[in-house]
Amino acid sequence: MLQENFWEIIEQSWLDSSELYEQRKKAIQNNKEALLEQLSYKLEDVVTKNYIKRLSELSKENLTSFIHLLEERMYHIDRKEIHTHTDGSDDGFLYCRCFIVGMGKAYYNMIDENPSKAKFDLEAEGFGFSAYQVYENLFDEEFDRYSKHSMESCSNENGWKE
Image (cartoon, rainbow, N blue to C red; front, top):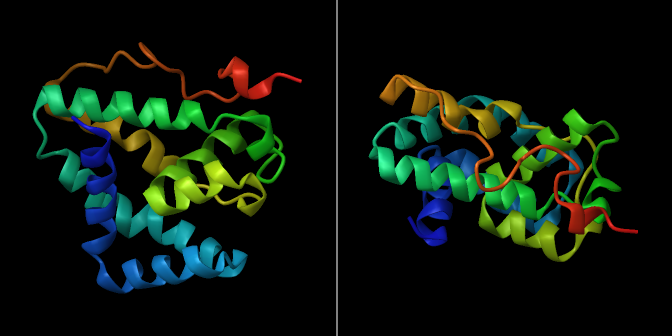
């Protein structure tokens, strides 16, 4: 699976709920914390359900590739400069990064390029970990997590250098 396909699955999961898609588009443009906070709840509920449905249609090979891309994208934004603007705890920062990825490519790139645009305590834990559950449900085995990149906070050594 290409990174384009990875982002397309997330994008389509938002498009499945057109009203939320439009709200997300507006939130990315104005980066208002109140709107982003509302969307974090919708991401954890409605959008994650859409996302799980889409992931459930993937082959084992494609789902494995998707999860590896998810872990890599999470690892990439595991950086002190982003952490400064989100949440203090390791778990909180992990869940904030789940939110950043779950908001899609445009929001992810915005935060990646300008970490000061990240907001405090916006989380989407369920989104970040649901792909593992889908894999387990479909293939009756646990996914070998972090075989390429760890999603855990502070695992990207280059992102935490002083």
